[in-house]
Length: 126
Image (cartoon, rainbow, N blue to C red; front, side, top):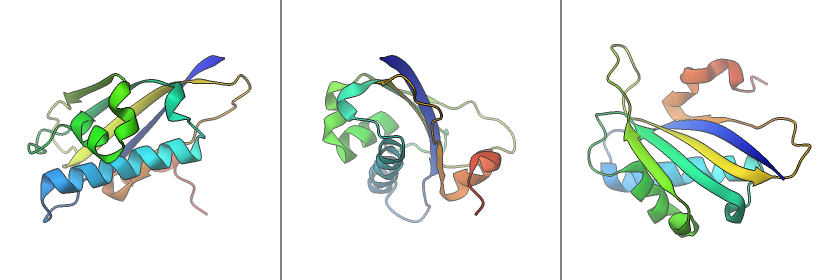
């Protein structure tokens, strides 16, 4: 087995209840990453999350646990993004690290919503 990691990000829509939307969005992002990269949750070592300072109603790690209860047994760490002028607002970033079979050639990052512009070169433009 080897250690593999993959990143992603999602924007949290405005206008909805932030805490509810945070759980829904972070869950969608984690599900997409696990599905596309064939990550068995039992093989996840840890998950690091960051959120922008304008997201104040819920911690992204708590949102992930709420959305996908299987993550309750996995070490999760959430921190706040530094405030950088011109940065996208309402963004949650994620880094999932897991034990994988040898031979995995590439990971598939996932950037959803407005977060797609963060790494547009990584998004399939078909």
